[in-house]
Length: 79
Image (cartoon, rainbow, N blue to C red; front, side, top):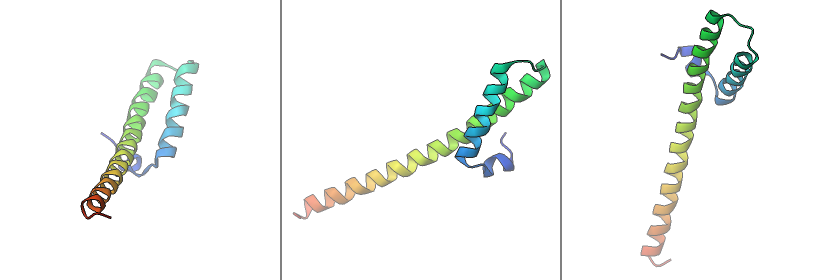
């Protein structure tokens, strides 16, 4: 479950923290418990990023659909 703090993160903030989590995991040298905590944090950050990207996609799709509807209306009215 995502916390309220995570929900307030912007895309870039979540992405940058996720990059840091991945870097730390790849570098190794952490205990099993630390690695699990990092992995769990990475999963939460990935969800935050996915929500931002899904929202952006929905906005783009809506804008494109509106533009297509306007163009169809113009064609139908003979403009």
